[in-house]
Length: 381
Image 1 (cartoon, rainbow, N blue to C red):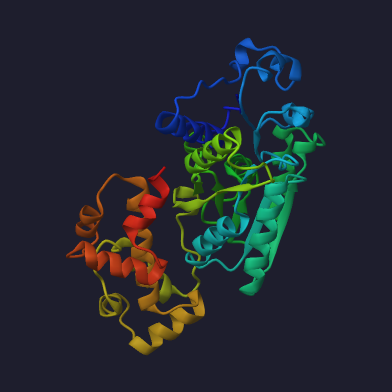
Image 2 (image 1 turned 90 degrees about the vertical axis):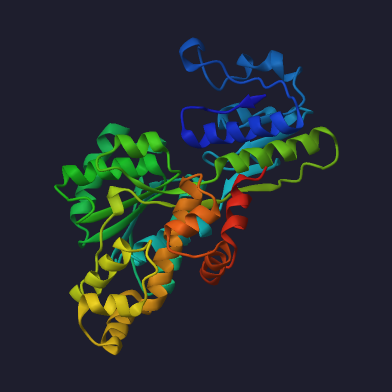
């Protein structure tokens, strides 16, 4: 049984991963909840009690359904929606890796001011906040935080954006805001427009999940940290199969949802670099990231000495020009790996490398892994 809410792309992604496992190693007979428009109430054990005795295992994301299921004798894998389900394996996020991608995304754009917005009393949201604040504190920055109370019913969801707008108006600008997920990012975007703030010029907003419907329906479209939900669903199904076959015991195992990359859209497509020379150099590097540019190419654009440009880059971005060029080019390679079906050989040609070996060596020097290996880790099941 798959008792999973399909209203969000994250959980639909998990279902797709389960389906792929079933196709490869099944077939399984998969039973899911009835569509919302024909079922009376979600979350009552009575709605599924007759099927409990018929299924061999369950993957569950609805917290209210899970409560009371601990007496069942069948294997159960939980999906952490608001908090992990006690005593069983759970699909959980990786807050440190997610926050690290957000921090890198903002620092590469030159931001010096940061904020976080997330849901109160939801485990994964609070963990992302803690990790984001800690990593920026280690880099010498402070983070302004706001907790959405609507999850607990204190303020209706449609009203909270007006409260958020008042908080946003008190923040220093320009600022980079990391939201716990795309729905939260959309709420912040609406609040920013109420406050009269320009996105991304005054406030750059980054969400998590890369829910294409939520991101595209927002204006401007939202940037987001993409997570590999399908892989997590596949791994959850594999563990459930081992539990059903008694090859493993249920010991509260964790199945980690891995972040893959940041999908950059208009909400963070901006530079917040105060040094005009560095900003001009960064614009040139980003516009030409598919060319095999070198430091001399950048120097021709800014007409200052190599030493001066190095010093100004270090002050503004904490890295050398050469390091920044490599980082931006590797980010473009990574984007092509995850967002297209081009082979590594084709990507090499697109970004100015003569051979797959050359691009692999270049990519490995920054990411510590070959591009093909990275893609296979995401797609292999």
